[in-house]
Length: 59
Image (cartoon, rainbow, N blue to C red; front, side, top):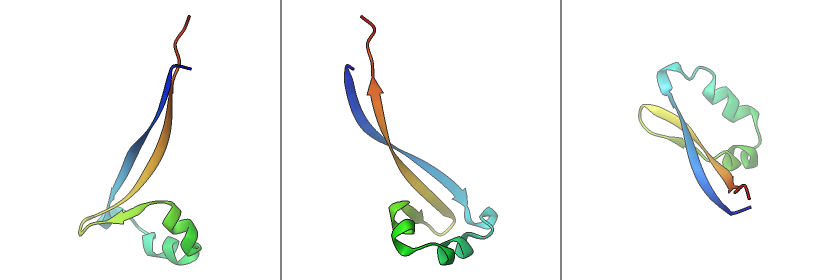
């Protein structure tokens, strides 16, 4: 292995097409929801995922 690093990826969704969002929040435990790194603006909902990246070098 040559290197490793962490990045984030954000998955946005327009609120007007996010049917059932509030029901999902009510259905799941608060700790689970908080671990998903959910965000909200006036028009969008988004989940940000942390990704571990590993760089390999062929010898």
